[in-house]
Amino acid sequence: MAILYVAGQRPGVGSTSVVAALATVWKKAGQRVAVVKPATLNADGDAAFYAKAFGSPSDASTVVAEHDQDELVEEASKRVDALAADHDMVIIEGLPLFDADGYAVAASPALAEHLGARVLGVVPYDRSLNATDAAKWHDTYASLLSGVVINRRAQYGQHDASTRLAPAFEDAGVSVYGILPEDRRLLAPTVGQVATLLSGTFYAGASGQHDLIESFLIGGLITEWGGNYFGRHPNQAVIVRGGRTDIQMSALNFPLKCLLLTGCDTPPQYVYQRANDLDVPLVTSNHDTPAATALLERLEAQVTIDHPDKIERVAEMVSDAVDLLAISESAGLRSD
View (cartoon, rainbow, N blue to C red):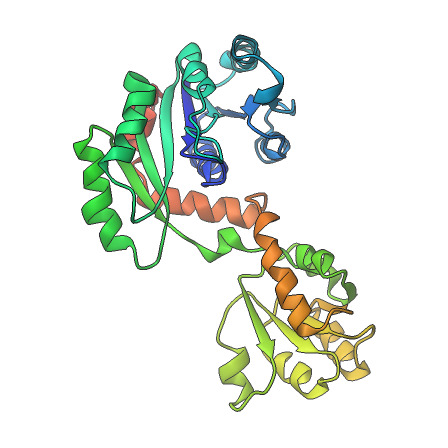
């Protein structure tokens, strides 16, 4: 059995997305893959997500602060050992290299070493990263370190990531297996999450509440043809003041994931009928447009990878941009 320990540079850098992608790709290739998150710095829903998405054990992750290191390692070993006989690969979402305050997490290399796992690091792209940062990975995990994946490369950071950052890590003895770009779909909330955040009410299209919204567009003082304005983005939601029936009807002429009416309790009858006929989610909120858009800034903290379309998308990205063969061979996964 092969064991791969995936460690983020710090919490929130996309380790869960990388784990989900690797599990998806290898399972599609016919490998028997188990996913587990035996320990966490703070209680989260990742273990439940892995249970739902991959049939993993549903045991909640052990919170580091509540156990000493030896106890933590022992408990994690039991969970991994229980999966050994029935799987070709166990992917562990491990503890990060550093915590949110920048302090080293000593339990992370101790856990990886005790499990006999190869370590794959997830490094968030940043122009300030250099060989010194690579050395921290090398010094912490030593021979256990397989390499890293650079994640969330900004749109205009491709040249810097590929010609400066990746070579700096390689020169420091840390293999870079791939560079993953930012992707709007992975940051997208669902229609239902938006409606809940805004204390909204569904009047039509409730069956679409699990659809993803990749762009928000405010329908206001439009000085151009509606097709140029409302037809510019895929998977978009349009936010319109409740009294602007004209703009609402114009928006409904183009593909929408949601039409959100602000500052009102009930939609105009014409708008309701049109949205209902098209089965477009129609949501009203008592918040006015400025308040609603301000609240939407809180969505980032609620958005997770827990959505079939997101899992499929990140698996495609990893397949295209990451050297999966090198990672699997490093971890000891046999390809028959």
